[in-house]
Length: 146
Image (cartoon, rainbow, N blue to C red; front, side, top):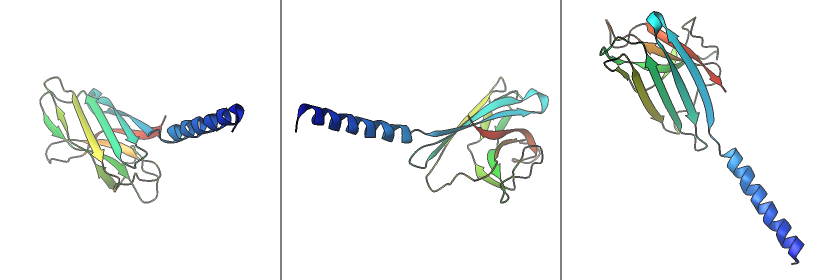
């Protein structure tokens, strides 16, 4: 094999590896969360090439020291789930948010490959924690690809 052929073969291998690395990037989706009383925050949903999901949710504006808040990714069979309509009758559960002394909360959830991300539009919903542990929606954000 001459020098140019070997160089071409090395370039081909490097090119294939570069393409493989590009294909291995996680898919990232975001939601800007807003709600009553100045609640605001962000959710970041990363789908890894392995099929696992890592979900980060941070919210501020909760009542300081008010405890644990359920939050979920909501969707429906039609694929048209929407925050304003609150029509996401199916959900993917996320780790609870716990308000600190300043009303700030952060939650991290790892979802296994067995949990498939729903198709269609989805939203992240934060629920009140009173009078029931999972009450009405107090903040919401549509999930979008960025």
